[in-house]
Length: 454
Image (cartoon, rainbow, N blue to C red):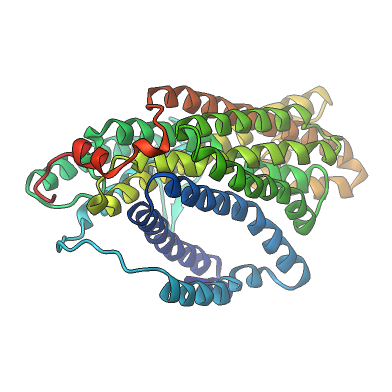
C-alpha cells in the first residue's frame, strides 16, 4: 500500500509519510523471516538457510539501486517505487504456497508503549546526529520549522533532542523490564539477554551495523556528483557488491557445515574491512571507477558471509517457542545500529566536506560570503550543486574544489565505517566457537531463561 502512495504522491510530505508506512511494514517482515528460519532449521541446515538469507539481503541492497536507477532513467522516479507492487504480490503468493505456519500458541499483548518509547528515543537520537551540523550542536545556527512554527530559542534543538533520547532510553528499559516482570512480552526481550550468545551477539551485530551499510549512502553520491555517472551507471557499479554477496552464499553454506559459524562471521568482517578500506584508498576526484568494482566485490562477499551467520550465532541458543521475540530483538539491534551508523557517517561525510571545501575556497581567494553560499549549496544538495558549478566558467574552479572536498569526505566516511567494522570484529571474540552439530535442542533447553511467558 505504501508503494502505491509513494508512486502517486503529489507532494514531498506525502512521499515521506508513505516511506514511514513502508518502514513499519519492513520492520514487521524482517524479524518474521528470521523467526521462521530459526524455528524451521537446525544444525547444518540452519547454516545453509542463513547463508541464503544473508546473501539475498546483501545482494538486493545493491540490486535495488540498479533497478531503481534504470526505472528512474528510462521512465520516472515513480516507477522506482511502483515496482514494489507486483513484487509484493508475487511474494505474498509464494509465502502462502510454500511457507509452513509457525505461531506462538500463547496469546500475548502488543507492547504499544514500548514501541512509542522506542520511536521517541531513537528518532530523537538520529535527528540530533543528522541535524547537528545544520542547526548547531549547542547554539542555534539555522531555522528549525515545523509547519508555521519556528524554534524561538537561542539553544539549538539538537541538545534538547539528545536529552529526550536519554530520558526515552531510560523509560524504554524500565518499561520493558516492568512488562517482563509482570509476565508480558516487551518490545525488546530483556530476559533473553541472559543467554550469552544472544547478548554478546547482539552487541557485535549493533557495532557491525554502524559501519556495514553506511558506504551505500556515500558512495553513490560520489559516483554521481564527482565522477559524473547517472543513476543507472551508478547502479551497475554497485552491482559488484551484489555479485560478491551471492558468491558468498555458496561459500558460507559450505563453510558453516564444517567450521564454527563465528569463524565464518570473522572472515566475512575481515573481508568487509578490506573492501571498505580499499574503497577509501582509491577515492579521488579523478579516480578510475574500475578500481572500485573489485573493492565492492570483496565488500559484498564479506557482507554475504558475515550478515547471515552472525544472525545464526545470535539465535542459536534461543528456544524455538521464543524465536519470534529473539528475531525481533536482534533485528531491532541491527536497525538501531544501521540508523545510527548512517547518521554518524552522514555527519562525517558532510561535516568533512564543508570544512575542506571552505578551506579550499579560501585558498583560492574567494570572498567569504560567496564561499559560504557555495559550501551551503554543496552540502545541502548532498553534492548535487557541483554539476551546476561546473556549468559556469566563473565557478569551475569552485567545482573542482568541491569535488576534492566531497572525495575527501567520502574517504573519511569509508575509513570511519571500517573502524566500526573493526570494533565489531573484536566484539565477536566474546562469542563461542561451536561447530554446527553442537547447536541442538538440548542447548536450547539448557540455556533458555525461565520467564513467566515460557
